Length: 266
Image (tube, rainbow, N blue to C red):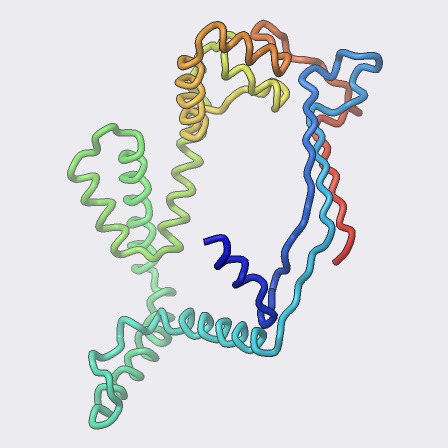
């Protein structure tokens, strides 16, 4: 397998869009920047990345293929609104009636009627009521452990009628509402343990009551429970971490994270 791969790579007719990259990265962690001869002189995390060469290039053939790809994507984007009106025939010959009707429906449905309908007050009212119903049903679905059948039916009906833009907009509004509702709940107190490592990387910021945070807490709790006291002590000693350590009061000019990137040749 390796021999075949090497023979393939050694071929001279290969033109790389992005050439092979040779880089080197170093990571330095300082768990306690307040200790040492000069406190807070070193950041908590220092990453140094050196890239020797970054080669980019396109041949004429690759450029032409790229332009064809862009044109195809543009064609698919423009045709997505009219695909539902396309007749179920494959040939143009002897099917002129179907294709003229297809062209007529595309113009009338997407241009004429759509413009008139969007500025109709009754349509605006119905659309707003549908968005409100979808927002309420989607909210109830998210907070309920087992949503009711009527809630599921309402969500399915609204998602069938609304377009992807309005569905995404309503969901974002519901997610903001859920985040505010979760933030208003009294958080449970956490003393030490694996999750207190958040202060080691994030300066002791409180965890938000979101789904992502609860998921990470569950994984971290399982990982901590899997460690024996001896393994936990050995791990804490290796990274110089203490469960009883208090959050540090950093100076204003202290740089907590530093990333150095060097590109020698482009």
